[in-house]
Amino acid sequence: MLDIIMDSLMDAVKLLPFLFLTYLAMEYMESHMSEKISETVKKAGKLGPLYGGILGMFPQCGFSAAGSNLYAGKIISVGTLIAIYMSTSDEMLPIFISENVAVPELLKVLFMKAAIGIFWGFAIDFARENIFKMKPDDMDIRHFCEREGCHCEEKKPEPPKNVHHLEEKHHYHGILLPSLRHTIKIFVYILIFNLVINGIIGFAGEEALKNAALGTKYFGIILTGIVGLIPNCAASIAVTQLYLEGIIGFPALITGLLNGAGVGLLILFKVNYDLKKNITIVGTLYILSVFTGLVMELLI
Image 1 (tube, helix red, strand yellow):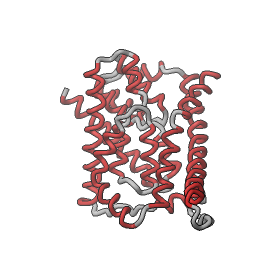
Image 2: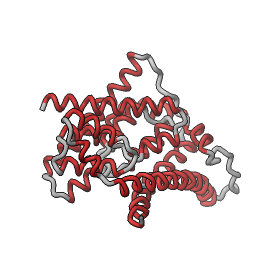
Image 3: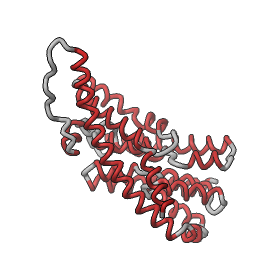
Image 4: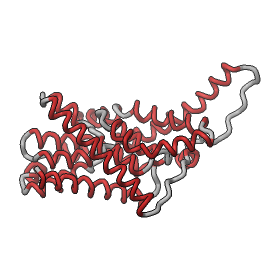
């Protein structure tokens, strides 16, 4: 039980820098961005899936958590969000390194996941705009702040005139506290969920998963896709270990890791209140990941 508590705490603590910096950036944007800058961000957003896929290659699931928050604030498109989710490596990279996996194979997995995420990200944004004629969401960070109850929309008292350093101190105080409130709220949410998931895995064990994965290779792809959706680093650990032990093949590994957005999915349901969109995003992520894995299985 102590191990479960410590593992859950460490999993949550590792996300704190990502969460805080993301919220700090969003608070800063909310208080500084003029209409002209907002339009620039929207135009640059067309390349969002490219940047999202590249940034998602960094280890841990911090960028998927950041992506969920940025999507909820309508800063990035759904295609960019999918690219981030698919590219995110979570615990795969540390495990590969600790197991002395050859560098070419490690890089192949990283770049393949990024390339797949970028491809599907652009495809989704293109289909939404040109086939389904859906307009991009207007950026609305202020609404996000109001919805989360951080009170960052409240007008701050005017600092004394001609006292520049007091003005700067007040400004950063004004964005630090809301950012900290956001971070603590999500941290507690993640910690509780991690305790539940790690407790189930700890007491039930992984043998049931391993035995189920011994079925057909196509069933293994479908199964690892489901496992990858678990919003916890244990999912990527399980999928990676099953691959290293020779229980599942490379297509199943890619499928599970494409779905392995870590706590990004958990945070998505916490900060984005459109349940229908959230379910659609998760369904799209799963279907595209499994489809990719099945195509790879047929081609390899």
